[in-house]
Amino acid sequence: MKRYLIIVAGGKGLRMGGDTPKQFQLIGERPVLMVTIERLYSMDNSLQIVLVLPKEHVEYWRELCKRYAFQVPLQLAQGGNTRFHSVQNGLAMIDDIEDALVGVHDAVRPFVAQRVFDAAYREAWTHGAAIPMIDVQDSLRHIVGEEGASEVVPRDRYRLVQTPQVFKLSLLRRAYEQRYVEEFTDDASVVEALGEKVYAVEGNRENIKLTTPFDMMVASSLMECWTQEQEI
Image 1 (spheres, one colour):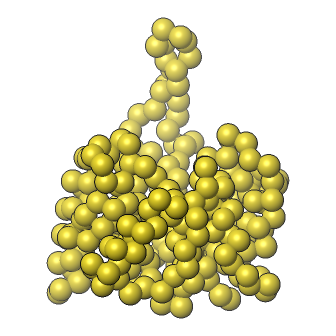
Image 2 (image 1 turned 135 degrees about the vertical axis):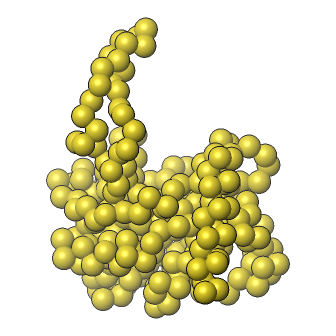
Image 3 (image 1 turned 30 degrees about the horizontal axis):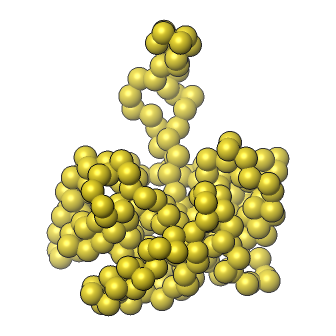
């Protein structure tokens, strides 16, 4: 079955600081977005990639592709006002009339593991919808009052959600025909709004979303370790 991957790169990077959006900042001497795409493409070089970028970032991306000799084949789609609308635009680029599998991945998650990538597509083929998740390690509390009162909640009932989130193409298309509501925080929530079940696969803890300067420091260390492993 044909595999597609929509990579959403619409973030402005406000929490990262500076003028450069987080997806274009460097780790291992290459922009984060390129590292993400190149790693995923190396896991399956038949992968059909759709990159969703804000209109104002397209020319800059093309300049980066020339500067860094980026050669992964992909299609470009224009970003929307929200992540929901960006994914909608990405889906519109896929003209496959047969059923296929399509993943949606955050541009600033460059460290998804091969086993997670494979498991998500395999589980989606079996059940229609699959997302990677990891255990919560810290204690959790629920704020119950306006003055900061809180109560403990059992962390074993909660999971942290990652990407790629993978679905049968027909299911995701049907889900994104719905009207947008703020409760749609990721693709799984859009699919669940149809009454469909979403199945879990085990994620990898290194698959962090790069949001803050601290995350970039962690990413630089992970990139160095990954590069060393490739050279062995």
